[in-house]
Length: 301
Length: 87
Image (cartoon, rainbow over all chains, first blue to last red; front, side):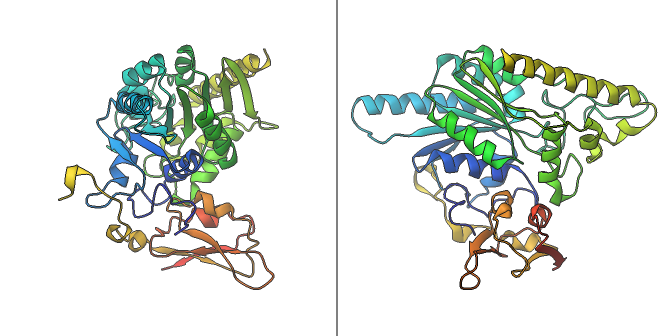
């Protein structure tokens, strides 16, 4: 057991072998230091880290419900501010929320929006595995276009999910937050840098982290780093940050690979490689090029 | 029952997830260059850099009590010093 890495989140949790989010959680919390309160939305992370009578958390940790992780931490943060004003607490405490894409994009969206608007001093980290993986791979609004899931199965009539994923970073940015960024678990140095910046920034900050799911994306347990790397190399998951409204691309592949390289590593996109679904594959490539061009344009301004 | 419904972390109550493992990663200490790439990626944080030989860089060392045998470390190793073997 690595002592430096397990100061906040210890092993013994029941996340799948080869799961990506423990690395995200540890990297982010290592930047937060000792005095940190963690809030958590329902999801894989909550279910796997809190097996009664054991808890993997060595820091104060609150799980309330699926939809109100951000609201819960808002209350904690406000209580802390009042106690500090009264002189009952003198420590500097950081507030971090972890949520999956279900608890952030869909179910916890209103509480996140509310907390961002009220301007609490907290850091929201969303690990995005593109679906409700804990309950068996149902679609969420973070599921990419063309994915085959339990609720959008690919078959004779369908090529999988027909809707485009929600652009959450843009929505968060529209709240006027001082810092929002997109990171990838395969690039831990970049993730560390962004977490540090977000934690140092006063006010609500947001980080969206790419987190491959071995079970429901259907790839071998050893592959999460390789697949996450490919997501950035193909511009499927560009790494950028928005600081006070200013865009900056933090990593740009020299020559982006075709997105098919990323898609073919996973079982959930297997159906896209049939003759019938060729237009879908081309559409995905087009959408990715457009999205990256949009971010690049904004970063140049 | 815990007072106030607060559960304290106690490592001794942790399930020993090492028994999930069917493939066992083994570090070839002679080959390991001590770059510590594998350390951060291990989902269980089981890898620690430990002293191996005098005058040499610290080498990767795996805690088999919690290692689930996913094989991520073997995959990310730049010199392929970690091999997955039958448990």
